[in-house]
Structures are given as structure tokens and as C-alpha cells.
Length: 137
Image (cartoon, rainbow, N blue to C red; front, side):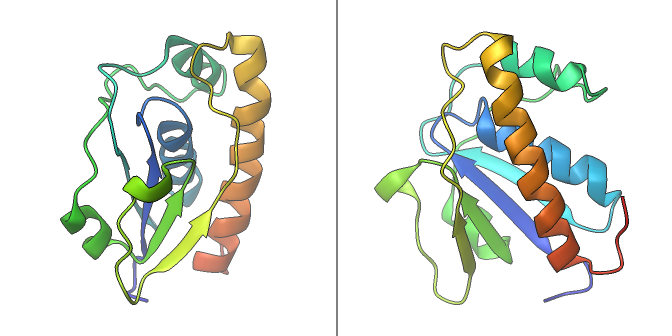
């Protein structure tokens, strides 16, 4: 892996899970990991309950916009983490893939999004210790 590993989080709409994961990893990594997210069928905006749940942690997603997944996105990543995008996620040889089975926050209120956020946070912290072993949080 390069000095700064790159992680790509992918879900269908890029409006919930992948946005939370990218923001949490970026927050915890403090520049030690390059982070991006994308969706196979991006929504028009970030899920409001996701924005609220992340704001509770002091992470502002108000300026984030769901983006379309492209092959160059996958090519640039060292680790690709999928979250329910199914066959729409391209597989590029030589990449490390992880599939995180998580509930989709679409249509859920903030009370139902918090446990999803917290599960993602736990997984992100574990991933960070693998990517940057000297990282302490």
C-alpha cells in the first residue's frame, strides 16, 4: 500500500451508509488515509436523518453530495468497501474488497440511524488500525 492508503466506500444511493463511513474514517484518520465515497445509483441529496445523526458527533455532512461510482474511483482505491450495492459494484483485480452488511438508513428516522452510524463507526475504527497501525483514538 502507498504511504497514504485510499479507501472507497460504496452503497447504492451514496446518501447514507457510504457517506457516514467516509466522514467517520476521514474524521478519525486525520489525514492519514484518503477517503472517498460513491453510489451505483446516487440520490439527489444526503438522507436528512443521516445528516442529523452525524451532526450529533460534530461531523457536518451538509455540503456533501451523492456521487456516481466510476471505474476510475475503484482503480484509485486500495480498499473498496461495499455496503449493499450488489452487482453494480465493479470488481477490479488487485483491489482489496470488504462487504459490510448494514441496514439501509433510507426512510428511517434518526433514532433508527444512530445504531447504524455506531456500527459503521466501530468498523471504521477497526479498519483504521489495520491501515495505519500506529493510530490511536
